[in-house]
Length: 345
Image 1 (tube, rainbow, N blue to C red):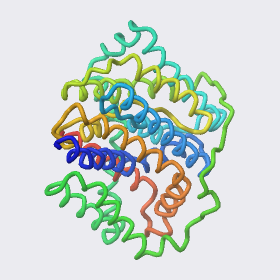
Image 2 (image 1 turned 60 degrees about the horizontal axis):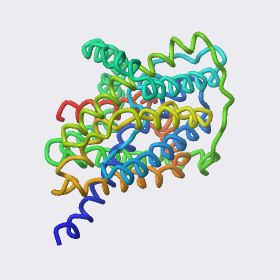
Image 3 (image 1 turned 120 degrees about the horizontal axis):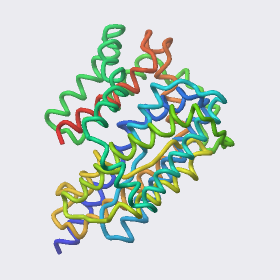
């Protein structure tokens, strides 16, 4: 009887995990891809590819291992891209860097000494690198609130209140508040829906030395140190030992496959992993793998909506529609939410 009554709760926990994982940082992904030269259609394609590859990984690994294995796009990697410049060769060079990053991730799974070498990177050094990447995103809400407090303050206020009293719903509540603000400002009447239909925009990778050092290697380092290694630690804290080799092989190979469609990198979930692996997903640890599966299907469901999400984010990022608040705000809200959740965890 306990197993039966626990299953709907476990399924819901996985859905929430997927919702939080997507809504908390999709704007950072879109901002990062555009910063390295992607068009709106290419950025939407990248979001679509990421949803499919990480959703499939969640379902396959959770089902096969009977563990709540959740995957996500590299949010620190997307933030890194948001601070980068368009490389020589344009977005094609960035795609080449994504391919190299994926290959390095897979190599860490194949060649254990390489993975151990990455694990020896001092945590303080990796944290400092990530802090430098996220700095401009973290301070952007203050700047945005000064520019238009009536548009920005409601979103921040809703997020703060829910963080204090119902933190699981803080991100979704802030998103709803943002939608309400956009409706009031008439944003949806100015949407450009030409690329809203789900489709892939493939780009032939171009391999450039500058992009290798400016994008590929930093993307690989922050993805390993800020996502994969902490992700394994989170699972281990709840008694799950899937090993790092198989997830690295999958996420690396999937990143290589998804790169021509615009996906930058996927990895083990770190921050949101606890929602599916912890007690919130049900009292029976042996049944929490179901949360991993439902999380994966949630990501798969978001995939076809990538074009629409990109169009809404573009309209919301317009200085015309949000009274001078530029695209940094939306990426910054997501970055601030992730930072706060990580600190509370």
